Length: 597
Image (tube, rainbow, N blue to C red; front, side):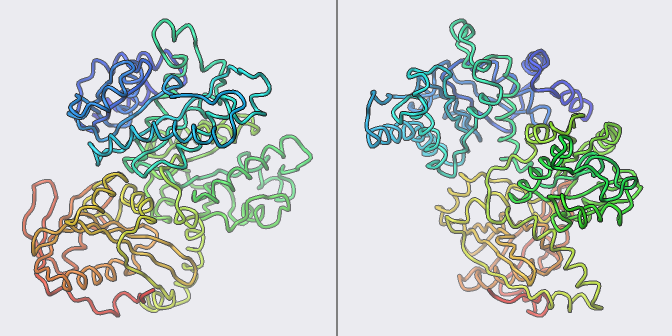
């Protein structure tokens, strides 16, 4: 299996290589179908090759999908027919690929702003209405809806940009409304941005359209399917969240050990120095959106830190770095160290290093780490990292924005811990305050995000889409709760999610996940106490739970016995079923040092 996966990864390594994608598609067509995930692809144009290439890319991710391929121009036929094969297929994910021919109408010349806006809302409402129809029939399915690729043809010439009723302006507004009005069960695929990047004159292939009804040049089939693949990957919880950076000739020009902090090239009046500054500014933007920053450098730590603290041109500062590792050990070992210090998996790391030898070593010994192919010219660093699409997340929440700060604040927590002799005293000094609340609509995105990406503290590792979570919120058998936390250094926001399923006088913990940022702080004790209080008020006499092992959730293995649960049985693969009679399981408040918010 590992050898097959390696072959698929190599075959699909360069998604921009059409020949490689074609070979991968042909091989995928011969591959026996699995049954997970179940994906339906519906399109206005021809989608046959899209389905084959998408299957190949998912195989390279270790997934063997079963894919329903809709008919040409068959979106309405499948969606509006309640008894269509599409609905009988019951997909987990639906990929909708409309195009400009699906637009019901365009504004007439000199249409008023009000009329243009009304029509744009009708057009966006048409596409979102199809999604709503799917959701009514398949409430657990997550829908990936392509936005509309704006044409290169300009009916009004240069006036396209000056008239609100022009087709270009109108389609931009429709796309904006799709993004602004989409419900939680819909994710927008940014196909227009991809087409703009490669260039509209390259993206559109009129000959191919008239010959085989392809909506774009097949030269970019790999890039197109990779966009879909990345969103499906994020939906399954596979997200990267930490950027690990080399220093010399990566963040600045030259070697700080030889040149000193004043000699490295960050000169804004020099083309090379300006390129490094532009890269640092881009990295700072990533940090502001919640990407964790770490340093992995072969250097003397004091000299490396001096560049951050004393060079007047540095954009990044030392406090922006959540984990700073500078020594003479091999980088594979240091990446493991960074993973341990930040308490995140190696598959959360993205490695950016100008040295091809270092990159090759990391790729060989740490295949879980994503390694960026760094160009020789630092002017192209921003493009290389941006086009690597390492940080394609499904949502952006307030907790994401504060994540990098809370990791950076961990240094202050470590200093506090080192100044005290007792761990309990350390927890008291943190002055933690928590809240346990029913899931609200405002918190659903964060709840979905945490359920889908938490690995270490996760009892069952069951992934649920935002659509499925919305369905549970409407089901009286389910109760969903969030836990928020703050301490003297950081406001973590929502850091734990619980899904309880009632079965008469019995209740089952369907899901219990917690962010790795707050592990070993007693939040699990606080959470369990709140669960017990809640269930006792409702007259529940039995609480059942289950631990299902994965490669990453060993931390949760002993949780249930520690909380007083009795083992009921095992499944032969490490899974264990537990039971707790209520009332019971009391935990003294002094064991978790957390106050109510």
